[in-house]
Image (cartoon, rainbow, N blue to C red; front, side, top):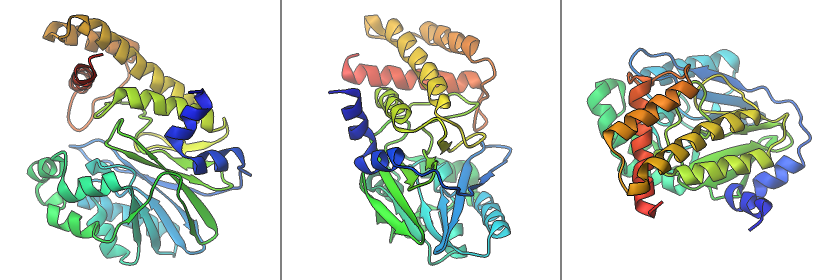
Length: 312
């Protein structure tokens, strides 16, 4: 399979078509990055169409979502017409009940895997957030209700909303169980979820191998002038950030593979890998009340578990 064929398989025909035919018209994208003491910051992005606002991701805690609503209303007199949930991690959908109440006519758009994961709490994330954050995080019933009429998109689907056309790519498990990417037709803008992390260690919760493939596909699909809006850290970034993200993940992959040549990862080997990653990326910060070492250790263990499953 050629690299172009791999890109088509990973990112969908619609994304490829729009990226190569982009006229790079202007689009104003607004962003809100939450600031809460006991969790890491998460981004929400939005832009206007003549049929209403398109919002990408819904924050984590209910107070964060309430502040997001205030920011949206400070930038536009329009209501939110569509909310895209990029993946099934709580910092991207926990605020949906607040947004549903503020914008009752908004369409919730996501892929099947994300919708089912939220409805069933497939990874137990909602239960953990309820235990940790109490009434600051929505209960399962409220989130299930918020997703009740969600529209399911498939890879390569295009949706017209007002004067804009959105192209959706649904990517397989990597950082999350799946990721919905959105490209705006004739505009140099795409929304990529958590496929690029800025300033914190990237954690491959599901598949590091897939994530590396997806980064390769993003690099050959988008142009140097394209603006990529990610889920954490200053946005937008350019495709050069893909190189930085791949370098970190590839280094982690190589180090874990070497350590697991005998089929196991010992505590001493994990500690050494964490130390080497710290040396290479000394300015990364911990997240969600965890130190950098704790986050790196968790990431290394996830990669070792994935390698065990596939037998390296």
